[in-house]
Image 1 (spheres, rainbow, N blue to C red):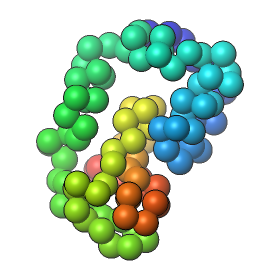
Image 2 (cartoon, helix red, strand yellow; image 1 turned 30 degrees about the horizontal axis):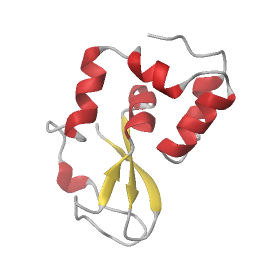
Image 3 (cartoon, rainbow, N blue to C red; image 1 turned 90 degrees about the vertical axis):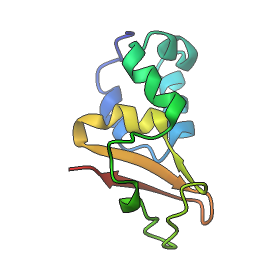
Image 4 (cartoon, rainbow, N blue to C red; image 1 turned 180 degrees about the vertical axis):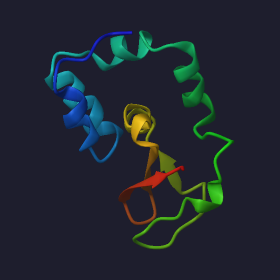
Length: 105
């Protein structure tokens, strides 16, 4: 896996969504496509499903509009993967365009 520059992970934790994550990677000299290619297989498997089935998906509710429709909630893979040590996943509610994080403890 490609090593990220010093301090970049801290900046990435402040990102709202995947577009911002990829922008920050590029601005810091990391090609998002090359970075993705370097990820371990178990991380890439998370992209295909889009969710972790071991988590309680009923707990995923937009704090802005109350939407809980999984078809309208978009998991932000890049951001979720980068903040996994914090025990969170990041989502975007496409109904009201709100980004939010869900803690899975």
